[in-house]
Length: 276
Image 1 (cartoon, helix red, strand yellow):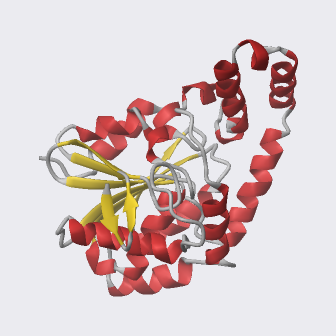
Image 2 (cartoon, rainbow, N blue to C red; image 1 turned 45 degrees about the horizontal axis):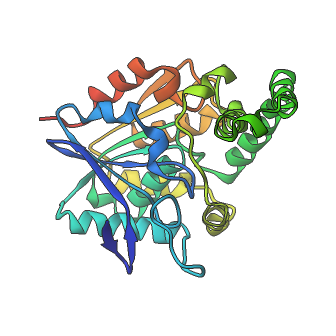
Image 3 (cartoon, one colour; image 1 turned 60 degrees about the vertical axis):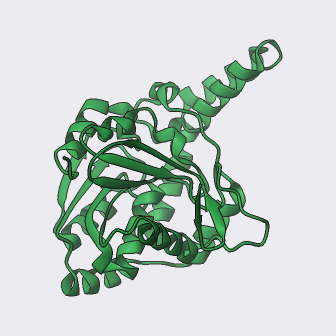
């Protein structure tokens, strides 16, 4: 456990070499659903995961603030505890947005930045994601699978198998082919944390601050990966890449390139992240 800002955060480290901090999605989720694929990035480097406050194995008492500023402060405290002058961040989904928020608050502390399927940089793009995800979840093939599951009797015969299948169908809209959801490690989201983080962002638009910060403190190197079939609008990531002058890689996948195109995902990050 890491003790920062009066709370305890669960951490997990793999590999040896230059350190990369991986930021999971959610908000309110945990790092486990990035496994086992993200562990392949530990060849020639050390990968540090942590469950962010209010999610996974880092629960906090009710009433503890869990907004975006607290998440950024936790990440800065982790950097300080690790005695790093600058940190390399790899953020997935919400973790990509968290990485951007950290860069805006502490631009001098970021060595490299990798964003994978990053959450949208504006509330307008986020609303487009919500509409698209709802549309996909209402697709006839997914509706039919849910109805078949309810009628199968699996819940009574094999509760664990039922829960696994129900999870797969709950995330089906994230994938180009919803059948790939069976290869995603199941996870849970703490709804209170998720709601409070998004509420703390309000009607956000990071682009003006990103432009100002990038002109004043440009990132040495950055890479952005986004799926062409991601329900999160790819245009948001394209705009961020342009602002940051980042390398941009499009993959023919949905929201989970580590599951849908594992080899291409690993190759794209392995050649970018620092290694021994």
